[in-house]
Length: 404
Image (cartoon, rainbow, N blue to C red; front, side, top):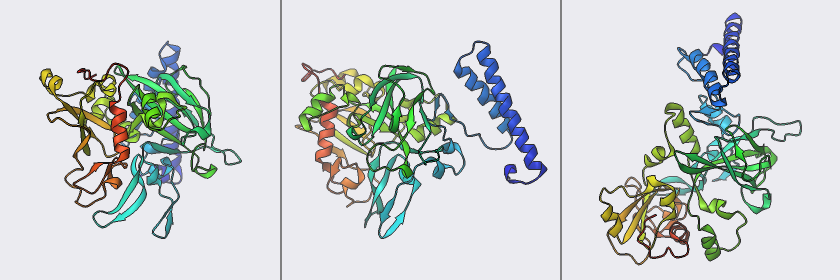
């Protein structure tokens, strides 16, 4: 029973009790800070009081914190029961003669551009690499006023201040060192950034104000697009010059950062505050695999040790002529293993999980990295460019037997 929905004295009594616990939490935070404690200790003091208040109610209060991280705005509906429609920003969809505004399209993953197929019914074919968080505050003109904040301590790695220069509009990238490994949070569609490149920021520090800069947005759909990423290759400029030319964003282009599901990770942290990104990501199942010749070190393996080969005998990895890399459906790299066959170029070794029926368009399933139909998918041009990004090396590295 939700006592907050009752009228009369019960409602007022419960409301007073909640207010008391909030006050106690704030007092606890104040004592922690006045005693020389850190902001983290103050936060823990508040959470401890609020959690104690929740005991016996079979629920958990929604806060901006998820274990050691925090949500990037003050919208906490993600952690409320049935709160997803208030957390995710909807899109305007027109499909099969029907118009709708599904909030589900603000989630991470294949949530956009539905296509009806004979084999699997409706398949969503467009991949969304982050989450879109709705505004909770607007001024009298309807302009969003939400402050965008750092999910954790870090260094501002890059700021794009030119809205037309990216589909993300104005965005900020913060580099975090988690267990000695670099990860990158991205905050997009900002109205204005508040920080400078190279600036050290604390968790919760204001990074900018929510806006609607970038492609396909208007004031009504103003939101903040949030990503948690790995960086693919330090030699990204070589790759962009080879395939496209022109790159105003350095290595912090969206083409060189691959995101994992931030909402799932933040929710998992609520249950296990010690869950590292590496442990979370190594628990994901591969969707497809690609093998390619071993021509030199892979920069992504140097940066992310948890992707490295798991074989016990290092001589096996050292002598293998090829690598096999596994990916999620959205193309996030999960693992590299030695591959015993000599290859002249990249080849698909696993098209899709066994539960996917035969005859489904591989383009629909894999962010256009594969083409053909299951189970006989082959690399599409986009997929070939992606493997080239993963494998491109710096001067003097080609042909090296080093793995990373």
